[in-house]
Image 1: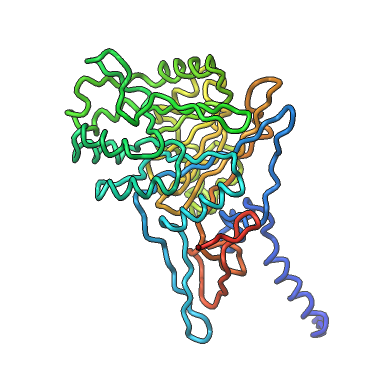
Image 2: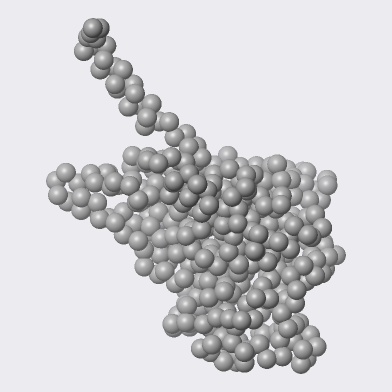
Length: 394
């Protein structure tokens, strides 16, 4: 029998502990059953491409399936003295903290509401708060088209949404009565935003299947145009207007995580960290993504989606960036697009699809994130940091 001295064993054990604690070096290393580090957080400044004479960079952020989750998620953590501290993330106040910080760090960026933000209760107050967030564009999601059109008249919706400080996009409704595109005061077919040297065009497609959930009185005289034809038509229109980047915002869920999580036996938050792998993406019955496969190359440059919370897509599908986060007022999606002025198109190799940003008010000090699905007892908390900067609560 071989014996080891205590002096030899102890350093080995300590070394093993250190290795276990430091083995998560990148976001993708969180694809494991237990343990997490910087999971959906960016406490350090991210090394990003920078604009130069040839390449122009723009950062796009999006909210989806907020579902009026105004209150934050709060987890009480007891320490060894029996005292409780609160781990907090999500909710309107933390959304506001992060969007303000993003505008400070990335002044030449855009913020998109990709749908299912509003509920049917106190729409006036919701619109007031949405104006505080300062979205650049919004669309209506599946839930909004369903309950808002059933519980409000077209005139009242037109009036209330005219108070938003940004437009709502509806690109494929055609008014048969007036033989024109659908028009309300604050509803537009498309929107062009200038960011630095770039012109970015936004369009929205409502799936034809939504005719079954939208109130019949609202749809009276309205024809929902086919996805492929309308997207191609608007893409050509925007290119003629010298738009550099076209973003399609859709109220139809995309998911590249659920099947992978089930296959690997992992929580859905702990899979799908490699953007160019989309083997697990569920798009066979997806109207817009199915159409995307049939469209000419680079008809659109990026897609933001909504429709169902607790799903994640941060992947290149058919070579197009597609983003959707877990929603419920807890995350932001983020893409850094790099536009090549020489070839006048997005450089897909330089473009970065980031993992979603979790809206943490504070961090578990050991993990530098606020992932609360594992044991929390006795863990120390610190204020959250984003891109090397503390989030002001003033």
